[in-house]
Every structure is written in structure tokens, then in C-alpha cells.
Image 1 (cartoon, rainbow, N blue to C red):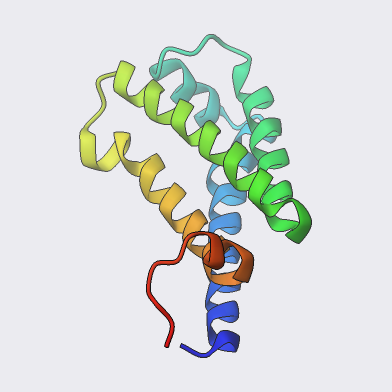
Image 2: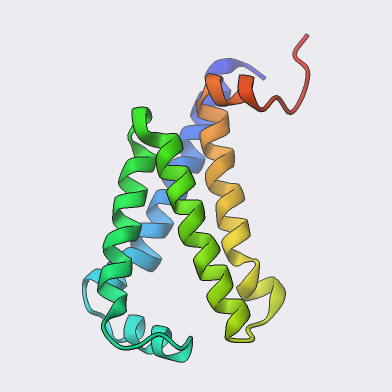
Length: 130
């Protein structure tokens, strides 16, 4: 695949991931939307944690979007997603729709970074280049 096309596909995946995280997870928590606290309560979290978790998510997404800190942002975001997965397991949520959703997001996030970063592709080659 053309390196220019690879870069733009990676940027598109990165942008979609960031928009999803900001719109579906960060914004409800930072805007104190009732759905954020209700969801956290259903998962067993005490009241008041949604805002702090939203701030952590925002910091991770910002780090992921900055080219120099993108790998750090991806590692921190994956840690956050691992915590979300553990919470879903503890709550007894369905496997494919809830528990593994963090894994799906993580693969999408790393895929975008892998496609836009030649250094990451060299470190983790998936296919041999001719």
C-alpha cells in the first residue's frame, strides 16, 4: 500500500477514535451528564468518580493525538481501557458487547497509530514489504 494512503488511513482511524472517545465517554463525564453517573453507579463505582475519570481520559486522548507523545498516550489509554474491561467483568456484563468493547477500541486505536507511524510499523511488522 502506498505510504501516503497508509498515513491518511491511519490519521482517519485516529480521528475517528478520538472523536468517539471525546463524544461518547469524555464529554458526558466532564459535563456532569446524569447518564455518566448513572452508568458508573450501575457498574459499582461510588458517586463522584466520573469527572476524574473523564479528565484522565481527556489527558490520554490528547497525548495520543500529539505525534511526539502518541505511543505514551496509546499505552495510557490501553491501561484505562483495561480498567474498563475489568469493571465490566466484575459487573457481570455480556462478553462480546460490553467486556470486549475495550479490546475493540484498543485495536482500533493501535491500528490508527500503527498506520500513521513508520517507526511503529518497523518495530511491529505485520507483513513483509517487497
